[in-house]
Image (cartoon, rainbow, N blue to C red; front, side, top):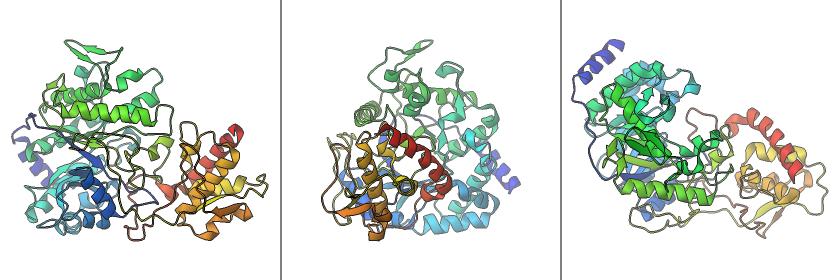
Length: 491
Protein backbone atom coordinates (compact mmCIF):
# COMPACT_ATOMS: atom_id res chain seq x y z
CA UNK A 1 0.00 0.00 0.00
CA UNK A 2 2.75 2.45 0.95
CA UNK A 3 4.65 1.78 -2.30
CA UNK A 4 1.55 2.29 -4.40
CA UNK A 5 0.71 5.52 -2.55
CA UNK A 6 4.25 6.77 -3.09
CA UNK A 7 4.10 5.94 -6.80
CA UNK A 8 0.84 7.80 -7.23
CA UNK A 9 2.16 10.78 -5.31
CA UNK A 10 5.28 10.85 -7.45
CA UNK A 11 3.11 11.05 -10.55
CA UNK A 12 1.04 13.76 -8.93
CA UNK A 13 4.11 15.85 -8.12
CA UNK A 14 4.95 15.83 -11.82
CA UNK A 15 1.44 17.05 -12.69
CA UNK A 16 0.54 20.61 -13.48
CA UNK A 17 0.02 22.94 -10.55
CA UNK A 18 -3.57 24.03 -9.92
CA UNK A 19 -4.32 27.59 -10.99
CA UNK A 20 -6.65 29.88 -9.08
CA UNK A 21 -8.94 31.51 -11.58
CA UNK A 22 -11.94 33.76 -11.53
CA UNK A 23 -15.31 32.02 -11.41
CA UNK A 24 -18.60 32.97 -9.85
CA UNK A 25 -18.65 31.60 -6.33
CA UNK A 26 -21.47 29.19 -5.50
CA UNK A 27 -23.30 29.27 -2.16
CA UNK A 28 -24.15 25.85 -0.77
CA UNK A 29 -25.09 24.48 2.65
CA UNK A 30 -24.00 21.83 5.12
CA UNK A 31 -26.74 19.34 5.97
CA UNK A 32 -26.03 17.67 9.29
CA UNK A 33 -28.37 15.16 10.88
CA UNK A 34 -27.32 14.99 14.54
CA UNK A 35 -30.87 15.49 15.74
CA UNK A 36 -33.71 13.55 17.32
CA UNK A 37 -36.16 15.75 15.38
CA UNK A 38 -35.25 14.94 11.81
CA UNK A 39 -37.52 16.22 9.10
CA UNK A 40 -37.95 13.60 6.37
CA UNK A 41 -35.11 13.94 3.83
CA UNK A 42 -37.62 14.60 1.06
CA UNK A 43 -38.92 17.63 2.95
CA UNK A 44 -35.37 18.93 3.36
CA UNK A 45 -34.59 18.44 -0.34
CA UNK A 46 -37.79 20.35 -1.20
CA UNK A 47 -36.65 23.08 1.20
CA UNK A 48 -33.37 23.41 -0.68
CA UNK A 49 -35.20 23.51 -4.00
CA UNK A 50 -37.56 26.22 -2.74
CA UNK A 51 -34.52 28.30 -1.77
CA UNK A 52 -32.66 27.50 -5.01
CA UNK A 53 -29.79 25.85 -3.15
CA UNK A 54 -27.89 23.75 -5.67
CA UNK A 55 -24.96 22.47 -3.61
CA UNK A 56 -24.98 20.50 -0.37
CA UNK A 57 -22.25 19.03 1.79
CA UNK A 58 -22.99 15.92 3.84
CA UNK A 59 -20.96 14.42 6.66
CA UNK A 60 -21.56 10.80 5.79
CA UNK A 61 -23.47 8.69 3.27
CA UNK A 62 -26.87 8.28 4.93
CA UNK A 63 -28.91 6.11 2.51
CA UNK A 64 -32.18 7.92 3.24
CA UNK A 65 -30.62 11.30 2.53
CA UNK A 66 -28.96 10.11 -0.67
CA UNK A 67 -32.14 8.48 -1.94
CA UNK A 68 -33.98 11.77 -1.39
CA UNK A 69 -31.30 13.63 -3.35
CA UNK A 70 -31.62 11.31 -6.36
CA UNK A 71 -32.86 13.20 -9.40
CA UNK A 72 -32.83 16.52 -7.52
CA UNK A 73 -30.08 18.11 -9.60
CA UNK A 74 -28.37 19.22 -6.38
CA UNK A 75 -24.60 18.75 -6.43
CA UNK A 76 -23.49 16.67 -3.46
CA UNK A 77 -20.36 16.23 -1.35
CA UNK A 78 -20.53 12.99 0.61
CA UNK A 79 -18.32 12.16 3.57
CA UNK A 80 -16.00 9.32 4.45
CA UNK A 81 -16.02 9.69 8.23
CA UNK A 82 -12.91 9.79 10.38
CA UNK A 83 -13.94 6.46 11.85
CA UNK A 84 -13.80 4.86 8.41
CA UNK A 85 -10.35 6.18 7.47
CA UNK A 86 -8.26 3.35 8.91
CA UNK A 87 -10.08 0.53 7.10
CA UNK A 88 -10.13 2.32 3.75
CA UNK A 89 -6.47 3.36 4.08
CA UNK A 90 -5.42 -0.17 4.89
CA UNK A 91 -7.29 -2.09 2.21
CA UNK A 92 -7.98 -1.50 -1.48
CA UNK A 93 -10.82 -3.99 -1.19
CA UNK A 94 -12.37 -1.93 1.61
CA UNK A 95 -12.07 1.20 -0.53
CA UNK A 96 -13.68 -0.60 -3.48
CA UNK A 97 -16.54 -1.73 -1.27
CA UNK A 98 -17.01 1.77 0.17
CA UNK A 99 -17.21 3.37 -3.27
CA UNK A 100 -19.57 0.67 -4.55
CA UNK A 101 -21.84 0.98 -1.52
CA UNK A 102 -21.84 4.76 -1.11
CA UNK A 103 -21.12 6.27 -4.52
CA UNK A 104 -21.53 3.97 -7.53
CA UNK A 105 -24.94 2.69 -6.49
CA UNK A 106 -26.35 6.23 -6.38
CA UNK A 107 -24.87 7.92 -9.45
CA UNK A 108 -26.05 7.66 -13.04
CA UNK A 109 -29.07 8.87 -14.97
CA UNK A 110 -31.72 10.04 -12.50
CA UNK A 111 -29.38 9.37 -9.60
CA UNK A 112 -27.43 11.52 -7.15
CA UNK A 113 -25.09 14.15 -8.55
CA UNK A 114 -22.10 13.31 -6.33
CA UNK A 115 -19.25 15.70 -7.16
CA UNK A 116 -16.96 15.35 -4.14
CA UNK A 117 -15.98 12.83 -1.51
CA UNK A 118 -14.71 14.41 1.69
CA UNK A 119 -12.00 12.10 2.99
CA UNK A 120 -12.33 12.62 6.73
CA UNK A 121 -13.60 15.70 8.50
CA UNK A 122 -11.01 18.08 9.96
CA UNK A 123 -8.62 15.12 10.48
CA UNK A 124 -5.66 17.40 11.30
CA UNK A 125 -7.29 19.08 14.30
CA UNK A 126 -4.74 19.72 17.03
CA UNK A 127 -7.02 18.03 19.55
CA UNK A 128 -6.81 14.74 17.61
CA UNK A 129 -3.07 14.64 18.33
CA UNK A 130 -2.24 13.20 14.93
CA UNK A 131 -4.35 10.05 15.22
CA UNK A 132 -5.76 10.34 11.66
CA UNK A 133 -2.84 11.92 9.81
CA UNK A 134 -1.21 8.71 8.59
CA UNK A 135 -4.47 7.50 7.05
CA UNK A 136 -5.28 10.47 4.80
CA UNK A 137 -2.99 9.96 1.78
CA UNK A 138 -3.35 6.15 1.70
CA UNK A 139 -7.13 6.51 1.99
CA UNK A 140 -7.21 9.05 -0.84
CA UNK A 141 -4.98 6.83 -2.95
CA UNK A 142 -7.22 3.80 -2.47
CA UNK A 143 -10.46 5.71 -3.00
CA UNK A 144 -9.01 7.28 -6.15
CA UNK A 145 -8.14 3.84 -7.51
CA UNK A 146 -11.66 2.70 -6.69
CA UNK A 147 -13.13 5.63 -8.59
CA UNK A 148 -10.91 4.80 -11.56
CA UNK A 149 -12.25 1.23 -11.57
CA UNK A 150 -15.81 2.58 -11.43
CA UNK A 151 -15.13 5.05 -14.27
CA UNK A 152 -15.94 7.94 -11.94
CA UNK A 153 -12.50 9.46 -11.36
CA UNK A 154 -12.95 12.24 -13.91
CA UNK A 155 -16.21 13.35 -12.33
CA UNK A 156 -16.00 12.69 -8.57
CA UNK A 157 -13.16 14.54 -6.84
CA UNK A 158 -11.56 13.87 -3.48
CA UNK A 159 -11.10 16.64 -0.91
CA UNK A 160 -10.12 16.86 2.77
CA UNK A 161 -12.03 19.48 4.81
CA UNK A 162 -9.44 21.08 7.08
CA UNK A 163 -9.91 23.18 10.18
CA UNK A 164 -8.20 26.56 10.10
CA UNK A 165 -5.92 25.43 12.92
CA UNK A 166 -3.89 23.55 10.29
CA UNK A 167 -2.10 26.82 9.54
CA UNK A 168 -0.94 29.79 11.57
CA UNK A 169 0.74 33.16 11.41
CA UNK A 170 2.86 35.06 13.89
CA UNK A 171 1.08 38.32 13.08
CA UNK A 172 -0.10 38.97 9.51
CA UNK A 173 -1.55 36.87 6.64
CA UNK A 174 1.60 37.09 4.50
CA UNK A 175 3.44 35.12 7.21
CA UNK A 176 1.00 32.22 7.07
CA UNK A 177 2.50 28.73 7.30
CA UNK A 178 1.18 25.26 7.98
CA UNK A 179 1.90 23.81 11.38
CA UNK A 180 5.40 22.38 11.33
CA UNK A 181 4.28 18.80 11.84
CA UNK A 182 1.83 19.12 8.93
CA UNK A 183 4.16 20.58 6.29
CA UNK A 184 4.96 17.25 4.61
CA UNK A 185 1.42 15.89 4.53
CA UNK A 186 -0.02 19.24 3.41
CA UNK A 187 2.45 19.27 0.52
CA UNK A 188 1.31 15.77 -0.44
CA UNK A 189 -2.34 16.75 -0.08
CA UNK A 190 -1.91 19.92 -2.16
CA UNK A 191 -0.15 17.90 -4.88
CA UNK A 192 -2.99 15.39 -4.94
CA UNK A 193 -5.64 18.12 -5.16
CA UNK A 194 -3.73 20.03 -7.83
CA UNK A 195 -3.34 16.94 -10.01
CA UNK A 196 -7.04 16.07 -9.85
CA UNK A 197 -8.37 19.60 -10.19
CA UNK A 198 -9.95 19.63 -6.73
CA UNK A 199 -9.89 22.59 -4.32
CA UNK A 200 -8.32 22.83 -0.90
CA UNK A 201 -11.30 22.82 1.49
CA UNK A 202 -11.06 24.82 4.71
CA UNK A 203 -13.51 25.59 7.51
CA UNK A 204 -13.32 29.21 8.74
CA UNK A 205 -15.19 30.46 11.82
CA UNK A 206 -14.75 34.13 12.79
CA UNK A 207 -17.41 33.51 15.47
CA UNK A 208 -15.05 31.16 17.29
CA UNK A 209 -12.25 33.72 17.15
CA UNK A 210 -14.56 36.20 18.85
CA UNK A 211 -15.96 33.65 21.31
CA UNK A 212 -12.56 32.35 22.40
CA UNK A 213 -10.71 35.67 22.66
CA UNK A 214 -12.07 38.55 24.72
CA UNK A 215 -9.56 40.91 23.05
CA UNK A 216 -10.76 40.08 19.53
CA UNK A 217 -12.32 43.21 17.93
CA UNK A 218 -16.01 42.46 17.45
CA UNK A 219 -16.41 44.51 14.27
CA UNK A 220 -13.46 42.65 12.69
CA UNK A 221 -15.55 39.45 12.79
CA UNK A 222 -18.14 41.00 10.44
CA UNK A 223 -18.08 42.58 6.99
CA UNK A 224 -19.12 46.18 7.56
CA UNK A 225 -15.56 47.39 8.04
CA UNK A 226 -13.48 47.57 11.19
CA UNK A 227 -12.01 50.30 13.34
CA UNK A 228 -9.18 47.83 13.97
CA UNK A 229 -7.96 46.89 10.48
CA UNK A 230 -4.93 44.65 10.09
CA UNK A 231 -2.16 46.20 8.01
CA UNK A 232 0.09 43.78 6.16
CA UNK A 233 2.49 45.76 3.99
CA UNK A 234 0.44 47.14 1.07
CA UNK A 235 -2.61 45.10 2.06
CA UNK A 236 -5.18 46.14 4.63
CA UNK A 237 -7.64 43.65 6.13
CA UNK A 238 -10.98 44.86 7.41
CA UNK A 239 -12.50 41.50 8.34
CA UNK A 240 -11.38 38.20 9.85
CA UNK A 241 -12.53 36.10 6.90
CA UNK A 242 -10.22 37.81 4.41
CA UNK A 243 -7.33 37.66 6.86
CA UNK A 244 -7.83 33.98 7.58
CA UNK A 245 -8.30 33.10 3.90
CA UNK A 246 -5.11 34.89 2.86
CA UNK A 247 -3.18 33.26 5.69
CA UNK A 248 -4.03 29.96 4.01
CA UNK A 249 -3.09 31.37 0.60
CA UNK A 250 0.32 32.29 2.03
CA UNK A 251 0.74 28.88 3.65
CA UNK A 252 -0.03 27.17 0.36
CA UNK A 253 2.40 29.45 -1.43
CA UNK A 254 5.20 28.44 0.91
CA UNK A 255 4.80 24.79 -0.10
CA UNK A 256 4.60 25.62 -3.80
CA UNK A 257 0.83 25.69 -4.34
CA UNK A 258 -0.08 29.34 -3.97
CA UNK A 259 -2.56 29.17 -6.85
CA UNK A 260 -4.48 26.13 -5.66
CA UNK A 261 -8.25 26.83 -5.67
CA UNK A 262 -9.80 27.11 -2.20
CA UNK A 263 -13.34 26.21 -1.16
CA UNK A 264 -14.94 27.06 2.18
CA UNK A 265 -16.32 23.85 3.65
CA UNK A 266 -17.97 25.41 6.69
CA UNK A 267 -18.66 28.98 7.76
CA UNK A 268 -21.53 30.53 9.67
CA UNK A 269 -22.80 32.12 12.87
CA UNK A 270 -25.00 30.58 15.60
CA UNK A 271 -28.21 32.19 16.78
CA UNK A 272 -27.95 31.46 20.50
CA UNK A 273 -25.85 29.78 23.14
CA UNK A 274 -23.30 32.57 23.74
CA UNK A 275 -23.38 36.35 24.33
CA UNK A 276 -22.36 37.05 20.73
CA UNK A 277 -24.70 34.40 19.29
CA UNK A 278 -28.08 35.90 18.41
CA UNK A 279 -30.40 36.39 15.46
CA UNK A 280 -29.14 39.88 14.68
CA UNK A 281 -25.48 38.89 14.65
CA UNK A 282 -26.13 35.71 12.64
CA UNK A 283 -28.05 37.62 10.01
CA UNK A 284 -25.42 40.36 9.82
CA UNK A 285 -22.57 37.88 9.43
CA UNK A 286 -24.19 35.53 6.93
CA UNK A 287 -25.63 38.31 4.80
CA UNK A 288 -22.33 40.15 4.85
CA UNK A 289 -20.50 36.98 3.86
CA UNK A 290 -22.89 36.22 1.02
CA UNK A 291 -22.73 39.77 -0.31
CA UNK A 292 -18.94 39.70 -0.21
CA UNK A 293 -18.66 36.30 -1.90
CA UNK A 294 -21.19 37.01 -4.65
CA UNK A 295 -19.53 40.35 -5.43
CA UNK A 296 -16.53 38.32 -6.68
CA UNK A 297 -14.14 40.84 -5.10
CA UNK A 298 -11.82 38.20 -3.75
CA UNK A 299 -9.21 39.04 -1.11
CA UNK A 300 -6.03 41.17 -1.11
CA UNK A 301 -3.90 38.16 -2.13
CA UNK A 302 -6.49 36.88 -4.61
CA UNK A 303 -8.27 39.94 -5.98
CA UNK A 304 -11.20 39.07 -8.22
CA UNK A 305 -10.91 35.38 -7.34
CA UNK A 306 -13.60 34.30 -4.87
CA UNK A 307 -13.58 30.86 -3.21
CA UNK A 308 -14.49 28.00 -5.52
CA UNK A 309 -17.54 27.18 -3.36
CA UNK A 310 -18.84 28.31 0.01
CA UNK A 311 -20.94 25.97 2.18
CA UNK A 312 -22.86 27.74 4.94
CA UNK A 313 -22.91 26.03 8.28
CA UNK A 314 -25.56 25.07 8.66
CA UNK A 315 -28.85 24.38 6.94
CA UNK A 316 -30.66 23.13 10.08
CA UNK A 317 -30.18 23.20 13.84
CA UNK A 318 -28.93 19.92 15.33
CA UNK A 319 -30.00 19.63 18.95
CA UNK A 320 -28.07 16.44 19.65
CA UNK A 321 -24.62 17.80 18.81
CA UNK A 322 -22.00 17.76 21.51
CA UNK A 323 -21.88 20.99 23.51
CA UNK A 324 -18.30 20.52 24.65
CA UNK A 325 -17.27 23.60 22.62
CA UNK A 326 -20.30 25.56 23.91
CA UNK A 327 -24.10 25.61 23.92
CA UNK A 328 -24.04 27.40 20.57
CA UNK A 329 -23.06 24.15 18.83
CA UNK A 330 -26.73 23.21 18.58
CA UNK A 331 -27.85 26.48 16.99
CA UNK A 332 -25.91 27.06 13.76
CA UNK A 333 -28.84 26.57 11.39
CA UNK A 334 -30.24 29.29 9.16
CA UNK A 335 -33.40 27.22 9.63
CA UNK A 336 -34.69 25.64 12.83
CA UNK A 337 -34.79 21.85 13.03
CA UNK A 338 -38.13 21.82 11.20
CA UNK A 339 -37.06 23.98 8.29
CA UNK A 340 -38.52 27.29 9.48
CA UNK A 341 -36.39 30.32 8.67
CA UNK A 342 -34.93 32.00 11.73
CA UNK A 343 -34.30 35.38 10.13
CA UNK A 344 -34.51 37.10 6.73
CA UNK A 345 -31.57 36.14 4.52
CA UNK A 346 -30.90 36.63 0.82
CA UNK A 347 -28.71 33.75 -0.32
CA UNK A 348 -27.98 35.50 -3.61
CA UNK A 349 -29.61 32.63 -5.47
CA UNK A 350 -32.76 34.35 -6.72
CA UNK A 351 -34.98 34.63 -3.63
CA UNK A 352 -34.88 37.82 -1.55
CA UNK A 353 -35.76 35.94 1.65
CA UNK A 354 -35.68 32.36 2.88
CA UNK A 355 -38.70 30.17 2.22
CA UNK A 356 -39.93 27.79 4.93
CA UNK A 357 -40.26 24.04 4.65
CA UNK A 358 -43.70 22.73 3.74
CA UNK A 359 -45.57 19.58 4.70
CA UNK A 360 -43.47 19.00 7.80
CA UNK A 361 -44.96 15.95 9.59
CA UNK A 362 -45.23 17.37 13.10
CA UNK A 363 -46.38 15.29 16.04
CA UNK A 364 -49.76 16.32 17.50
CA UNK A 365 -50.01 19.79 19.08
CA UNK A 366 -49.47 18.86 22.69
CA UNK A 367 -46.79 19.64 25.24
CA UNK A 368 -45.49 18.42 28.57
CA UNK A 369 -45.25 21.02 31.36
CA UNK A 370 -44.77 21.17 35.11
CA UNK A 371 -47.97 20.32 36.97
CA UNK A 372 -48.99 23.59 38.67
CA UNK A 373 -50.71 21.65 41.46
CA UNK A 374 -47.49 19.96 42.54
CA UNK A 375 -44.62 21.21 44.67
CA UNK A 376 -41.38 21.38 42.67
CA UNK A 377 -38.95 21.00 45.58
CA UNK A 378 -38.06 17.45 44.48
CA UNK A 379 -37.56 18.36 40.84
CA UNK A 380 -33.76 18.11 40.70
CA UNK A 381 -33.33 14.50 39.55
CA UNK A 382 -36.06 14.82 36.95
CA UNK A 383 -34.45 17.91 35.49
CA UNK A 384 -31.13 16.11 35.30
CA UNK A 385 -32.74 13.24 33.41
CA UNK A 386 -34.57 15.48 30.97
CA UNK A 387 -31.58 17.69 30.20
CA UNK A 388 -29.07 14.84 29.97
CA UNK A 389 -31.11 13.38 27.12
CA UNK A 390 -32.87 16.31 25.45
CA UNK A 391 -31.75 19.84 24.60
CA UNK A 392 -31.95 22.48 27.34
CA UNK A 393 -29.31 24.87 25.99
CA UNK A 394 -31.84 27.61 25.26
CA UNK A 395 -32.44 28.02 29.01
CA UNK A 396 -29.01 29.42 29.72
CA UNK A 397 -27.40 32.80 29.26
CA UNK A 398 -27.40 33.67 25.60
CA UNK A 399 -30.40 31.42 24.94
CA UNK A 400 -33.86 32.45 23.75
CA UNK A 401 -35.50 30.99 26.87
CA UNK A 402 -33.11 32.45 29.42
CA UNK A 403 -34.92 34.11 32.32
CA UNK A 404 -38.33 32.44 32.06
CA UNK A 405 -38.25 31.46 35.77
CA UNK A 406 -38.04 28.17 37.63
CA UNK A 407 -41.40 26.76 36.55
CA UNK A 408 -40.74 27.84 32.98
CA UNK A 409 -37.35 26.13 33.08
CA UNK A 410 -38.87 22.93 34.41
CA UNK A 411 -41.65 22.95 31.83
CA UNK A 412 -39.22 23.58 28.99
CA UNK A 413 -36.97 20.72 30.09
CA UNK A 414 -39.92 18.35 30.54
CA UNK A 415 -41.29 19.21 27.11
CA UNK A 416 -37.92 18.84 25.37
CA UNK A 417 -37.64 15.32 26.76
CA UNK A 418 -41.28 14.51 25.99
CA UNK A 419 -40.90 15.57 22.34
CA UNK A 420 -37.62 13.70 21.99
CA UNK A 421 -39.45 10.58 23.20
CA UNK A 422 -42.05 11.13 20.44
CA UNK A 423 -44.70 12.19 22.97
CA UNK A 424 -44.75 8.88 24.78
CA UNK A 425 -47.20 9.59 27.67
CA UNK A 426 -44.87 7.86 30.12
CA UNK A 427 -42.13 10.37 29.28
CA UNK A 428 -44.24 13.18 30.77
CA UNK A 429 -44.76 11.55 34.14
CA UNK A 430 -41.66 12.66 36.06
CA UNK A 431 -42.97 11.14 39.26
CA UNK A 432 -46.30 12.90 38.86
CA UNK A 433 -44.68 16.33 38.44
CA UNK A 434 -45.42 16.60 34.72
CA UNK A 435 -48.68 16.95 32.85
CA UNK A 436 -49.73 17.01 29.20
CA UNK A 437 -51.37 20.17 27.91
CA UNK A 438 -52.95 21.16 24.60
CA UNK A 439 -52.31 24.86 25.18
CA UNK A 440 -49.03 26.12 23.70
CA UNK A 441 -46.85 27.15 26.68
CA UNK A 442 -44.42 29.19 24.55
CA UNK A 443 -43.46 32.55 26.06
CA UNK A 444 -42.40 35.46 23.87
CA UNK A 445 -39.30 34.41 21.94
CA UNK A 446 -39.08 31.16 23.91
CA UNK A 447 -40.60 28.49 21.69
CA UNK A 448 -41.74 25.24 23.24
CA UNK A 449 -41.26 22.89 20.32
CA UNK A 450 -43.47 20.18 18.94
CA UNK A 451 -41.41 17.32 17.58
CA UNK A 452 -41.33 15.87 14.09
CA UNK A 453 -42.66 12.46 13.20
CA UNK A 454 -39.48 11.21 11.61
CA UNK A 455 -40.49 7.57 11.47
CA UNK A 456 -39.91 7.67 7.71
CA UNK A 457 -36.53 9.33 8.09
CA UNK A 458 -33.21 7.52 8.18
CA UNK A 459 -32.81 6.19 11.70
CA UNK A 460 -29.12 6.83 12.30
CA UNK A 461 -27.77 10.29 13.02
CA UNK A 462 -24.43 11.41 11.64
CA UNK A 463 -22.22 11.28 14.70
CA UNK A 464 -19.02 11.41 12.67
CA UNK A 465 -16.02 10.94 14.90
CA UNK A 466 -17.30 13.11 17.69
CA UNK A 467 -19.58 12.52 20.69
CA UNK A 468 -23.20 13.26 19.92
CA UNK A 469 -26.42 13.03 21.88
CA UNK A 470 -26.77 10.11 24.23
CA UNK A 471 -23.40 8.82 22.98
CA UNK A 472 -22.06 11.33 25.51
CA UNK A 473 -24.38 10.07 28.24
CA UNK A 474 -22.06 10.03 31.24
CA UNK A 475 -20.35 13.31 30.39
CA UNK A 476 -23.67 14.97 29.56
CA UNK A 477 -25.25 13.89 32.81
CA UNK A 478 -22.39 15.35 34.83
CA UNK A 479 -22.51 18.53 32.76
CA UNK A 480 -26.22 19.04 33.29
CA UNK A 481 -25.98 18.45 37.03
CA UNK A 482 -23.61 21.42 37.09
CA UNK A 483 -25.70 23.51 34.69
CA UNK A 484 -28.92 22.70 36.50
CA UNK A 485 -27.52 24.03 39.76
CA UNK A 486 -26.47 27.22 37.99
CA UNK A 487 -29.86 27.59 36.36
CA UNK A 488 -31.88 27.07 39.54
CA UNK A 489 -29.63 29.50 41.33
CA UNK A 490 -30.37 32.21 38.77
CA UNK A 491 -34.10 31.55 38.42
